Amino acid sequence: MEQPAKPDKRPNRSAIVRRIILLVLLLGAGVAIWKWTHRREDYVGGDVQTTGTIEAVQVRLGFQVGGRIADIPVTEGMRVQSGMIVGTLDPSDLQVQLASAKAARASAQAAVAQAHATRDRAALEMSRAKTLLGSGYATPQQMDTAATAYKVAVAQVQAAEAQVRQSQSQIAQAELQLTYAVLRAPQGGEVAERIHLPGEIVTSGTPVVAIAETDTVKVHAAVDETRVGAVRPGDRALIKVYTFNNRIFPGVVTDIQPSGDFATRKDWGAQRRDIRTFDVTARVPNPDHLLKDGMTAEVTLVVSAPVRVEAER
Image (cartoon, rainbow, N blue to C red):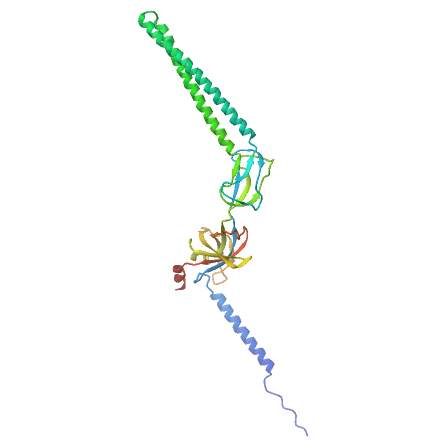
C-alpha cells in the first residue's frame, strides 16, 4: 500500500521575492515620506540655479514736433550707431516759419534805424530849444515840447530794439524746430520696429522707431523667496541659452525686486506656506549680439563666499 505524499513545507521562492520587493518599497516610501516632511526650504549653501528671460532694453523714438514723415531710412533688424539719422519730417512748414521770422527781423531792424533817426532829430531840436530859451528866443513851453518829443523818440528806439530781440528769438526757435525734423538715434543698437512709415502724419512725441540696445542686455531671473536672500547686487551671473548650449555669458546682478510676485508654489513641509518669487536682474555684455530679446536662459547666480559660508554652518 502506497504512502500518501507529504506536503512540501519549503517556502515558495517567488513568494519570498515578492515579500522582499514589498519590504523594499515600503522602506523606500517611508524614507521618501520622512524626507518630504523634514525637508528644508531655506538656503543651505551653493549657487542659485534658476531660469530667466533675455531682455534687450528698447527706446521708442519720436519727433519733438509734429508733421508729415518724409523718410524712415532704416529697416527692422538694422544696426544703427549713435547719432545716425533714423527718420525725417517734411520741413516745408518749418522752413516757412523760419523765413517769416527772418522777415520780421528785417522789418524790426528797419524800424530801429528809423527810430534812431527820429531820436537824433528830437535830440537836435531839444538842444536848439534849450539854446534859444537861454537867449530869450524860445518859451519854456517850446522847451517842454522838444523834451517830450525826445523822450518819445527814445522810447520808440527801445521798443524797436525789443522787437529785434524778439524776432531774433523767433528765428532761433524756428531754427531749433527745424532741427527737430531730423530724428537721430541717441545710442547704438538694433532697429526693433518701424512703427510709422513715410507719408504718415504724426504728432509731437509719437513713437516712430523702436531701437533695442543689444550691446548689453538684461536677464530677468525668477528666484523664490527661500533663496533670494542669498543673492546680492554685484554677484556674478552665468548665463546659458539653448542655441549656444556650451557657451557661458558672464554678467553681474544689478537689481533685486523689492517685493515678491504672486506665489508660484507651496512649501509642502510642516508649515505649507506660499512661496513667492522675486525678479533678479543681471546685466550681461553682448558685444557679438548673440543674445536676443525674449530668449530663455539658464541662470546660475554665484553666491558670494561670506553668504555661502554663513549658510553652510
